[in-house]
Image 1 (cartoon, rainbow, N blue to C red):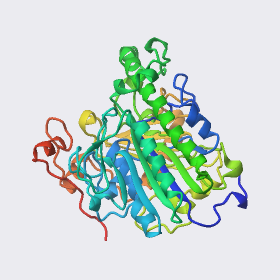
Image 2 (image 1 turned 60 degrees about the horizontal axis):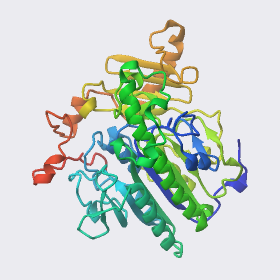
Image 3 (image 1 turned 90 degrees about the horizontal axis):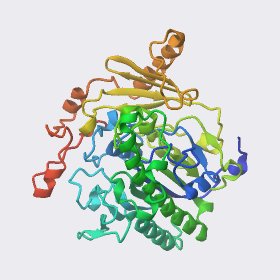
Length: 475
């Protein structure tokens, strides 16, 4: 599908509304073909937006993704390779860029996870990376009693009821007040669901998913079926409830007539294995589609005939910021490493292809025994290498559940060599030599807790926490 000049964002500065959910894998939507989940509002919105069907998370875990999103830079460049690190103030971030262009900036919702000063912590104004209006927390998944801090108030508050609903109401209040202003706004809405704990989903939503009725993916082994069904019930409950909350936001935007001058994005930071490939529920970080693929729906002013278009070429996390700037007709800072693909958003070609680089620089916590990897995703193929060599090669069109690994298959030797060349080109383009995790931990002087194999964030509760952060690595 192509678009003519009438589909272009011609003049003025559009608002940006960006909804980031947590651990919502790309497969778990009605519009994506999930036979179980009920997501009527996002299914409906997918017909009004451009759907990037192979969007990936550059590093499928919270802090690394969020840092790449805010900076448009790769984890190996920023040093943000683990959860609970502090993103240095020297990094030029999304809100700072839009603020310099005359935008009002707001962060509303829950998890920020870029502050590195403990999880129950007020992200102080000087550490908010350019967001002026602030409602949020560093990291919490207590969705029925979720804490937040508001603007300059040092006292912790709590969202009333189920937090995705409360966050949607807060976002709607902000947009209602902004409607009367001449200044465009950037509104970043952070919603923590459907990240575990899954049992905390609204009971009426969980009741929609009897465990015995759930249809599991064919790549879930028998030994994990019972546990997967139990977790899926709450996971899907969160999905449907969050879909409802996002519906509130879309309804308010239409009521306020904001859709006509707003770039709206719905996405997630990473996926969730949920038993696939013999990996327990809750796991991410891995190079499987269940972990790396995320939803990405985008609408924009004058979208016209492109409503409902599907793009199969991947969009990667560092590409998002420059593409938003491109859509808004704003200059892209030289520090940004991602690619501006706003032209593909406005001329959505299902046959276009790109190479997206995904990485796990230093697996941590429950993934600490897993191998480091670098991976590329195209519209058809996944190719992954660990330090020991090629580890995955899948034709995702013919093998959507990634059950037939073609690595080393002589019939696909030419394909493997071609993808290996593309992977090395992608690494070279960002100066990544792909070394062991120990190299990067030493480079940025990170110290992991020896028992939990992650950054110690819990010691901040008793005043003994130590902030860990990469040094500024460019001038």
